[in-house]
Every structure is written in structure tokens, then in C-alpha cells.
Length: 446
Image 1 (cartoon, rainbow, N blue to C red):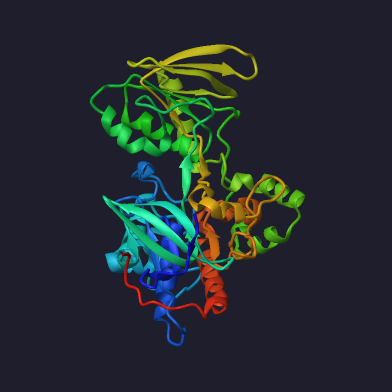
Image 2: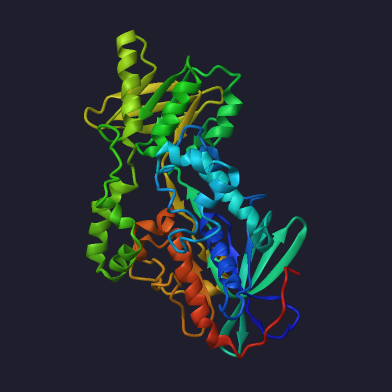
């Protein structure tokens, strides 16, 4: 159902953001700095809606010893504005750890520390975000045949709130991916739930875990379970011959450079496919070499001691996983011999990655005006704006889900600061096209 422009009391924002993970947090920072800059022109008004009760980013995998796989310089702001007060270095200064971090001689902070940095930054812009607010729908607002605004309906507690937006930025994040036919439960779960699940198991003296996957998360899960439960067996199941090291060499890392987005965007589809295959090892199903070495050390040590708790089922796959209530029975098949092993476990953990959330169900009838390519994927402009019918005047921007158009950095932190700067610049540049529409002073939702 669409609406006409009739209600002059509806608060109008230049930007409404759906979701408040690192990407839209970075956008909120960019907006804050834009509005505070001398001579920046008119203020860009914005508000963000987040279903979580507070800022959180992969909390289930905030393992104490895990480090980031991206340099601290690729934080929420530095690549866009090296003088930003929202940088990781400024966070360290505020926390009294700047000298200690420098002496550490490390580009890669602890993951839990980087999450604390995110929370610190989010607290500085909490006036532009509503937490515990679930977006229900987006409806077009028409002026004649043209869609000039987007009405965003959301639920906050028992209250329905509505915001009117000139531009919508969809940062709905990633969704845990379980293989087809697998249903999560008390004993079958995705690694995104790791830490809370581990807490529940501490008093139960588990005897065996099965971990499915060959990437960084799978290796981290196997290492943590092996260390936390010294009397339990950990069976790692993956189709590869062994864990493959992440390619973080200097030249390969250029795939994450801002200019690489231009190169990828302008390339033909065959070249895009080739680049993704060539450089998948920089991010997908790849493990830090230090962690690979540590897991190998443990396997070898246990062979020497004659007690093998860390078992690797390589070149293998789970063909049946059944929850029997008191345990899970996993049948693992060798891809080379067809031989099967039956493993009764306390839990099966799938470290099988994430998929981008499809934003189009939220868009309702607007989804029909979003153009798609021959494979059914959304067409996206270089400024991360969904290609729409000409009748849609406002901008629908994506933060994530653009790998097919913009390359491997779509859902990664590497290019976040630059990406949000480009989105903001696009919004500012396009604002003149709707300058004749009425302005309303806004300070919050109604």
C-alpha cells in the first residue's frame, strides 16, 4: 500500500538506517562529522533502528584470545578521515592504553577489544539510534506517480513508530547459514552461538563435540572446545585435506583497497567471477597460519602422549546428523573411500558461514521497482544505491549484499569507512533533486 504526501506532521529524515551494526555505525559517525564540519552546508538528518537492545557484533564469537584479521587502521573512520575523533587510536587514548598498544607492536587487536571500540563509538552517537526497535515494513509515499519518501514502520516494545525517509540505508547484516536440511536446536547449533552455549555445558562434563567447517571460525571453535573441556573429544569434520592458510600477503591484500572496488565494479562478469575465485583465500574457508600451527601442535602432542582428543576427519562430510535428545548422532562419510564413522556427541557445531540478509521483503511493493540482473540479483550503482524504476526518487542504499557488484569487501570491515563516505556523498549530491519538497524540523520518532 502506498501513501500520498498529506501529513505535514510526520517527521522527515534525510536518512533512515535499518540495522546498526558496524556499517551503519560508521555511517552515523560520517554523518556526525559531516554536520560538525565548518562550511559543510545544510545538516543531514538521520536516525537508525536496531532490533538488539544494545550494540552487538558477533558476540557469540568474542573469544578472549581471538584477534582481528584486519588492521586496526581499517576502523570505522580512519580510511575516510585520518583525523577523526572516532578512530581506534583515539579510543586507545581515551582508555589509557595507547602507549601499551604501540609497545605491543601488533596491527591486529584482540577481537574483544575491537568490539569494545565499537561500543565506545556507538555510545558517542547514541542520540541517532533507537535500540530494541524492529523494522516491520517500508511503504512508498507518492507525489503523483513519483515515490518521494519511504515510510518506515517499526515496533518498539508495544508501540508502533513511524519515520519518513528521503533515503533508506539497509544494513541488515548477515544471517548464520546452516546447510540445507539441518535444523538448529539445543544440541545442533551454528558457531555464532558458541560462547553462550559453552557456558551452559560447563557443568555437564561433555564427552564429545563435532565441529563442521574448514574456515577461521571452525578452527577457533575446535581450539576453544578442545581447551575448555579437557576430558572431551573434539572431532573436526571438513571436506578439505587440511586447514588452508589465509592469504594475507601484501599484494593479495590489495583486493581490499578502495580503488579495487572501482576495478571490480567496472569489470565484466567473467572477470568478476575470476577475481572472486583467485582471491577467495583472503577471506573464505581460510585460517590464520598461527592457529593452524597451534592445532597441528596439539594433534602431534597428543599422538606422542597416546591420548588423541583432537581428531581430524578430513576429506569428509556429515551425511546424517540426528538429535536424540540426550545426544546427537553424526554419521561422517569419507569422500575418498566412502567409509562411514558414527559419532555420538554432546553437540554438533556448524561453522558454515553466513549469508547476507535479503532486504527486499521489508520493502513490500517497492521491491517490484528494484531492478535485477539476469541471475536475479539486485542491480546496484557504484554509490551502493539499488537501481530502481525512475519513479522512485529517493535512494535505497545497501551496506552488504553487494559482492556481485562491488567485490569481496561487501560485508567486510576493510572498506567500511570509505564505503559510508561514498554513500553519504551520494546522498548529499542527490539532495538537490528533492530540495523543493517541504522541510520539517525533526528530533526523534513519533
